[in-house]
Image (cartoon, rainbow, N blue to C red; front, side, top):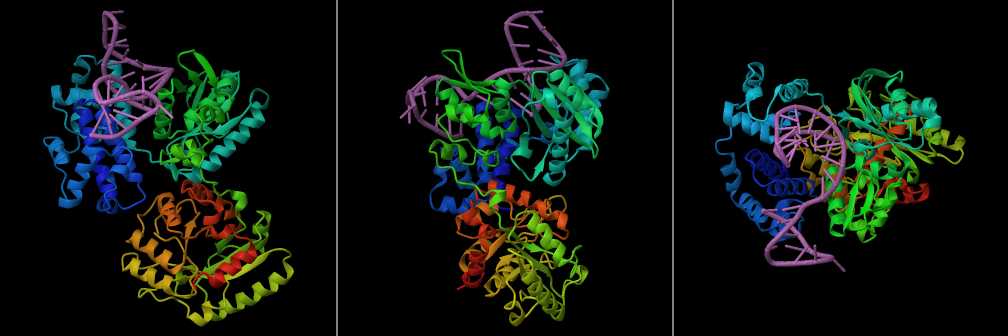
Length: 574
DNA sequence: GCCGTTTTCGGCCCGACTGTTTTCAGTCG
């Protein structure tokens, strides 16, 4: 685990304990903020420390700086050890239970000796929890429900599952409640295109809330209704995903959208700035406090405009510097779906894909692409029906023939060549040099010198792009044992592009790593790795990640027009 | 514990909901 992560986790734990011990909430918040900022930091904290720049990190003052320095130089943090003294393992875990906060947990711990999950269950069952001052039957019942939920621990859903659901709900709502409905948008982490989302939030503009909510909870894809009021409906849809719909009147739709989009850290920072200027932001609008006057709320842009900021794209709203940039009107121009000229990594029936070259080309043309990189697997990838050299050459011929027929569109010949155990490539240079584009990927030996093998691959003059560079699968595995810093340095040195694999369970590189890559001048390629023509649309997830990484078209290889791309592929290693 | 176009001291986001209260504390998003 990186030092950044370790320190962030320690600060988070300290915040938990301090909260449990009823320390000043502001102190607790200071630790939480420091934890978040360090967790999001794009540089190695050790480097920042050695260069004496810890103080420049927002939220890190004298106290935090000293704790970080102590940890980096000795491997220990005395404050952490001190607060963890006498805190039973398994106690803080209970803070994740809904409706059970630090105050109640401290009370149960102090009065009833609750130290773990089993203790908690016991004091709920035997009624002793309900006897404590300030407690009662209903509170305990809510905690019991929270405990049930905690134990069934539903995980976050991946973006790839959530996005189709939200689009179906919105399309159904437009059909069935069209005349009562104004604007309707997804909000929350889905709108920010996070890799995974908790539940799905949808905002609907209407002055007939009750009716719209009724329509929502009776949609055909609804499996179970959790709540249906005048302003909010909550359901479980097929597949077990929770979807909330909020009905909001026109004059506060914008501020509600801003509020429900988050992130929490972004909103807190925004409201703090507002407050310093005598303004107040809530889900109902932005107000001048002294004059008790509403200054905006109908459109989201108004909130930012009144604060003297540019409108901030939802993908940036994580309090990672976007607010400062928006104040200075220096937000980057982010890459957009329409900037993409093609996809540089897809598979066909030649290896483990489902479609012919022609079918993939047709699907790509429909998306408005002008090129498509055909990168089937190489010979060692037996499980994926990897191509022998003769087959690859035959495919090359077919591509050339098709390109004579495809007007205004170009299939690029390529391969996803395996990086072998010793770091050599699965095809010899004489073969690779015949191809337009070479993606090199690791598919085996996830724990064997991955970084060194990948770097050796990058040093090959024919390798253009490293495919799925960390190998993670969001819902399944951590990824290879890879040193991301070394990979980024090598990619910058060898002018090799790195892939943002847009397949929703990969999104690899992640947003933070992609941002670091771009800052080192590395080109990123947003590729779907599609095995089916109907999967090309997943490019949207990659674009979401790229936007979260603050990338502009100039950072993205497949935003280049065909002639410039071919030129780049020819000269980038020289 | 952090931080400064009100401030180096005295603040620190906002509102809803719930349950236990007789004026409010805890929790959540």
